[in-house]
Length: 125
Image (cartoon, rainbow, N blue to C red):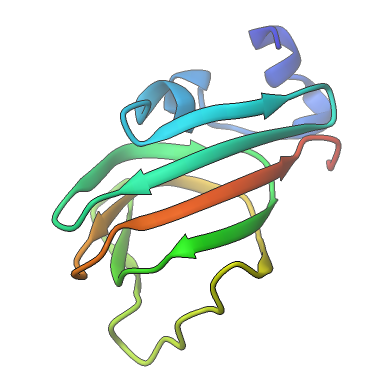
């Protein structure tokens, strides 16, 4: 998909393409499928790893295959989610909805790999 289409006004997304997960955090995200309607990404984060600052432009259906506690921080370094603090771990291998995410980092603070597949819905406003 061309950068022009990614930045189309219908998407109403203020962040640059350089922060897209496949660009800014390509060591952790890989493309497994894409067409005009959806984009599927695989994400793998080993224990102790921190994913650099990146975005997820579209909401998605998220499949979690391997869970580990993590800390998500915004572009200023503020903690926006720490799954060790009263967070109920999700069911593995079951779809869940995730809204789009502005710039953030993810630090795997647990003992296991965090392994997900995200099917992003590109046709939403």
